[in-house]
Length: 421
Ligand code: EPU
Image (cartoon, rainbow, N blue to C red; front, top):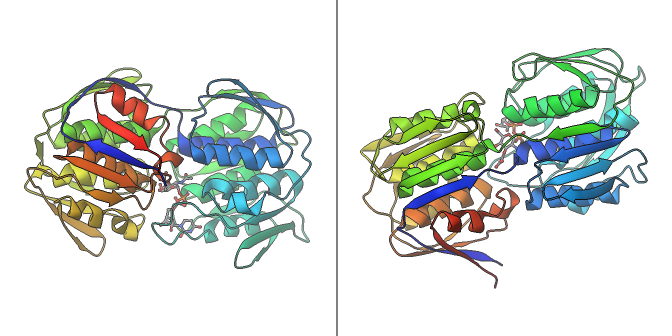
């Protein structure tokens, strides 16, 4: 098992370029199954979740060519196998998007239940409710979902989500794309990657409006044709570098970002005393490493993202006074990293869905274990800020979602190396 060794205490200086958004890429690549023709996709991050997805698609007969770094050509015109490999599907979360894509294109889908980061119970009842409303017969077993065209055929429908779900919103958009009639999703999630997926599909000939609002409308079309599309920059990768600079101190230009997507994160960092300057597609952050306490409550977009909970928590452990961090999306998410941070000297008390964090002057290096992707990112930030050496184990979680992490941090002056056991 590989690990990172970090010697903390060096301020971060220079510039870092953010990669394409993981959570957009893992939706857009399965969406290529809806298209008869070549989809050219730019800004595809080279991360393990994307590699697994490409392996699943290749195995189904999708022709995939790499045109250059981060630029792929996918052609799903002739699918030879409609059943995604269950072992690969179970290795990641977003493989559930194969359900919506296959249902829409082939009117049936047999897909294993997904795996991925297990920081909480992650039901898919809202996805299933959406498929059923679109006319699918759904059979669920312990480890598989089988979707078939129901007796009245597949058709557009009105669906109100009971919880704001990114995955269900995306899956229903995909499923409705090629079905006759209009579908309306009420209480839809509004994350930037939902807008990105809708823009991708519209570029390929779909008719989707309202993505990025609570009501998304999809008018089914007969077929999607090929086209070219560039994935947006990764909001959470950018937020992770911003949190790292805030905690460690330094002066960094974070390039290839959409500053508007970052407002929910940068406004909190500013409250903590960090200087932020927004440019058209970059953000400059300056931090002395001396932070003020704050209050953060995670919410669906445009609220503070749950995927930044762990990283902001590290900033809170180093801030003056008492901060409060409330998790409203995945209540059990604290358990993936708080014990590890405590072993580095952090003072965190968890009561229900709120962590009370009393700032300390200095974290100290320790050997810690990543239990999921963002927990791992937080431990790396803690290691960069800590005195002494930190070893972060289980880094395969981190490599799911951060492209060339060691290279990017090293270029900022960090002392981090990957060790293969
Ligand atoms: N939920 C249900 N039923 C459903 C779906 C969701 O009750 O059918 C609940 C969940 O339990 C959770 C809330 O609704 O409490 C929101 O879940 P959502 O469906 O939005 O999460 P997701 O689509 O499974 C995506 C991201 C996660 C991110 C969440 C929340 C992808 C591939 N994953 O997951 O990203 O935490 O949205 O923003 O897009 C990560 O990148 O590290 C990551 C975990």
